[in-house]
Image: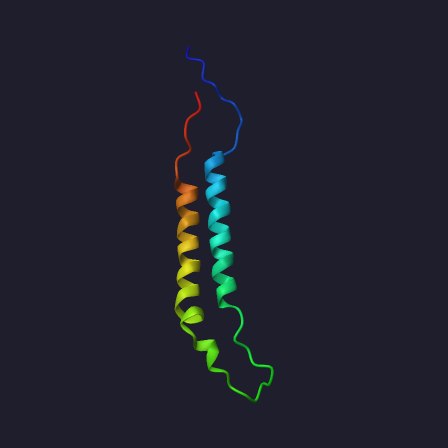
Amino acid sequence: MNKQDNKPGFALGKENYKLLLIGFVIIIIGFLLMMGGGSDDPNVFDESIFSFRRITLAPLVVLFGFAFEIYAIMKKPKEDK
């Protein structure tokens, strides 16, 4: 009979959790880039809500963060000997 080492442990490795944290920070940065551009007076239209940063850059940063999160989850943890 083969005796297998069935130690309980985490589903992901330490490196995976670090990558997940980095991806989360990237997503937060993307949402922070979307903030602002509001007007104090609701009767005055402010063109700054249509800036490149809010319409193009921030959503791309958020999407990159989500893609990075998928990579962090799918990355195979290194085997400890």
